[in-house]
Image (cartoon, helix red, strand yellow):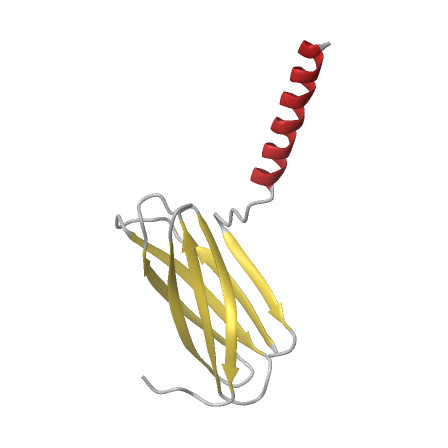
Length: 127
């Protein structure tokens, strides 16, 4: 009876562990976001790491409004024990696409990443 409880408890533990690991945000390839409130569509592709410690992301943003704007966003990269953020400011031409490559400094074991739109300004921010 005791052995059966241990086996059931072990199986339940493994099921919970597997479920939590499979639900983790493992964005190894790309992210597509349709932000209807800000009228932008964002596609980000994580590029192959060619330089150790530097991760490149190709970002393409569609501006669905007929005016110049600026996307302010961030990429958050996590390695399990720490995280780094890369801030993005991308000028958007009226009713067109903008494409850029973003380079982020990362730890060697960076696994998870996500993107967040912080704000879309109704003007072009100058660098």
